[in-house]
Image 1 (tube, rainbow, N blue to C red):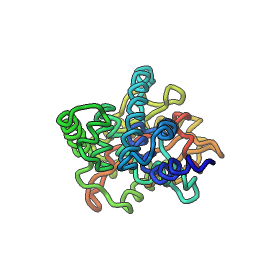
Image 2: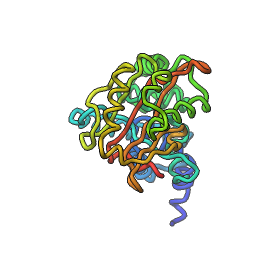
Image 3: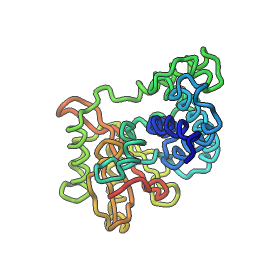
Image 4: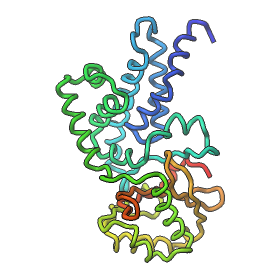
Length: 298
């Protein structure tokens, strides 16, 4: 590599993890996030680093702009997507790909990605730059080509929505793991499915993403009885009965991975709310779309 290219590469690599994290929060998929960072790298090579006062902020703005363009284009295609769309999970176990996991998903929970996905692309981008990476409002405004007052409104709406969707009493790691393990016991047949009523909120919502490729519900399922009925039904399907289940770390939190040998069929994760023994599961999300399971490892 030429000496002239070294400053570009050195500065870029120093911030690659942050850039991937920003793109992943906006896009929710690994491949698109890597494409956004690669496009930023190509553009960065045409910039004189000596003229950039704050390379981190500059690269974050550039990556988020690219990610925003990808999100807008993808959202137009999303209209043709069959069923609900969920973000792409990434294994973060020590045994998984440590570089990719640490760069992309270590600090980004799937629950947060689900909430961010309910925002508009512009709101997501503004929220990520301001609330996650603490860029000043004028810099966010420049990145999004909006006025500062407009950006303040975008961030305010996004912040309020994220806070509204967040659990009132987030559970600690051990409780989250115990609740996820309870689902593992049910999946493995060591606990009767009916016993899961005690750990489900009456308003629990189950969302499944099969992408039109695998069997999944076309709309979110709401309420304990409906959720348990759907789970009982899908667990009797031959392709699901053939699965083995394990508890794995996905996006930094415990999740269930269903697999048949080396083939991963689905990833299931939960969101819970409550204190101590009163904690209950409020959301269950399941991805079966094979195109979204490439970053999950056994």
